[in-house]
Length: 357
Image 1 (cartoon, rainbow, N blue to C red):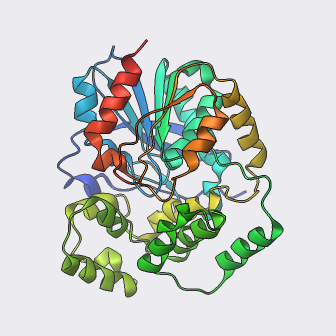
Image 2 (cartoon, helix red, strand yellow):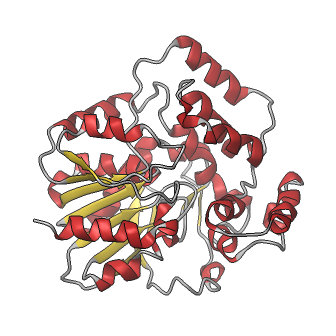
C-alpha cells in the first residue's frame, strides 16, 4: 500500500501574523499506514494552573483562540490548543479519504496520549466538538470537566430514504455554488422547515467542489468589519477561481489563508464537511457509543451556545438530552466563531466553570 501523501506548510507563511506570538510545539504520531504526521499545538499560561484543552473546527486553526488566551492566562489558566491535521501549523494529508471522522479521532487520541496530558477541562466548537467529545469518551480518565458549544455529537440513524437520496443526488450534481448562494441556505438551517441535512448539504458541496476554497474570505465575512467595495473586489477573484491571488485580502483573511500556500493544501477544509454525519454513515456505531457514554457522564459538563448561530441553533437541546448531567450557560451571541467575536464573555464563562468546585 502506498504511504499517505502529507504536505507541510513552511514556517515563513506565519511570520506576518503579529498577534499570535505563541511558541509552537510539535508532536509526531504514526498514521495507520505508518506515515509520520506532525501535529502542532500551543501551550500558554502557568505550568501548574488548571488546564483548558481548546479545540477548533473547520475551516480555521488555533489562531481562533488568540483573543481568548490573554483573558484565560491572566486568570491562571493554562491553555493547550492544537491544530487539527489539515489546519494551521499541523501537517496536511493530501487525499480526501484521509479525513474520515475515525481517522481524525484516532490521530488526536494518539496526540493526546503522546503528550500524556492529564486533569483537563475540554472545550470544543464545530469539528473541535465532534472530534473532542469522541476523544473524551475514549480517554475519560484524562478529563475533569467538559465544555462545548456551537457543536454536538450528531447521530441520525433514522433519516428517510427520500432525504438521503436527495442529499446524495445534490452532492453529485453539477450545480455550481458560490459563497452567497451557499450562505443563504446555511442561514436558513434553523428555520425548522426541512431536515437540517438538506441545508448543510450546500456547505458540504460548496467546500468539496471549490478547489481553491476561499477560507480567508469566508472568515473575513464573519469576523471583519469591511467595506462592501473590499468584499466585492475579493468576490470577483473568487468567481474567477483565483482567490489565492487576490491583493485585497484583509489581515484576518491573510491569517486564515496562511496555512495554505496553494489549493492542494486545502484538502482538510474541503473534505471534512462531507463527514459530518447528517445522514447514516460509517460513523454511526461509534457515535452511538459516544452518546451512550455521555448519558452516564457524572463529571461537570457545560453547554455554551451562542444562540445566534444558524448552523447549530437547536442542537443544544440534543446535547442536554444526550448528557443529563450537562448544564446550560447563558447564550452570549457572537455567531458561529464566538471565540473571536465574544472572547471576553466566553473566557469568563470558561474561567468560572474551570475554577468552580
